[in-house]
Length: 396
Length: 192
Image (cartoon, rainbow over the protein chains, first blue to last red):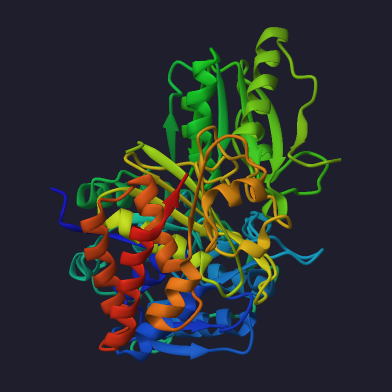
């Protein structure tokens, strides 16, 4: 049965900071200035007011912030940090250390463009660049989902079948600085949902002495990586279980993705984050104009839920995948290449087209979706796309 | 009362356009509406033209693009007129509310607006007189509530009092000054 919830109006940053307060982690280590977000600023007020028991460590860089979170987690603490854009880029090598030590660190990420040119606005190039770092990645459409995902992330990360770090992404400025309504759980409910943290292994357990971060050359390195891959393969069942448990608590259901008007659709649009909300309105309009189109909003990008995506998209004539990042691979954006690859083994599969959009915060509105709709109509009529990869909303 | 409205605020850095959008959203949310409030972030400088936006609806709001066709435009600083295209994209029958001591007919000419409705209120004058600072956003929010009916006025007053009391704990002259500004903004806004 769903529990009592409090209706609030918060920005995405405030919503995530509130979730962190309710999680009440043992340690938060963060770089306190730009490109840091208001998440850490708001959380530091909770620390100053004594509303959490957290040991708050201000570090001199994001590299150090992640290092401190790793040290704390290795010592058995529930550890968190938060970052954005260049901050995530500066954490790069430590991201791999966190996942290879199998430390369940949870990190809100406010997705913003990477320099250069210098830009502070939303796109997914920061998190997409980190997609191979061994972190689970959840994407959020609005402040409500950023809040809900962060709470679920702790339970997913700490599950003994997984023990992997999790990034909870939301769109910079669009939702991080946008005030919206949401419903929040009581502190006690969140605490009970997460339970008391007991680390699976810790450096401070003198009865079971262990080493973390050893040298493993040709003899063992490979096996470490295979074990990480196996943990990532076990993650889906845990993500699903936690999503269901959270759904029972809040009446808000979470899976790997969400669909809208997809069942009878001939064409599908795939989007992540806040754009999925705009796409929902666009689908209604395009349907009114006679295009049988539906939406698939991807929530979990790592691990990539290929089998489940194939199940719901098989039979569609065409799938338009929207990417808010340019891989510069010459093969389309990172979401697009994963989708295409997921369908490779099928003898009959949809046509796939890719739209790279919204880089550096370029707005995407209903006009842009109108263009996608016209293209999809043409593809349905002609049986093949004239262009596979396009830039949506760019002047070139 | 419309089912949903989109609002664009024009002001200069420091005049409280963002706070105005937030106050409106919080009041509408407390009255049971679904809301969005978001500023447009550029380089932040005192005095530079800036914009903020609201969506307010009886239904959940999923769209996350910028507001391009506002139903209501609020101009906090009349010196922006002629420099910033404040009426761009205004819907047919849309409303423009300008902070000025001038009457609406004069502003319609200055805006070069053929359709829609023009309202004026001397929000800066009211702010100076009630709490002694030229921060015109609270009387402008009240004027907006009057001309759109987006929130019931009594409910709006009650919510604003709660908000001001939690924000300015114990500083009763600021609280009462702002409440007087709100009442006057509501009462003194003029249409054609």
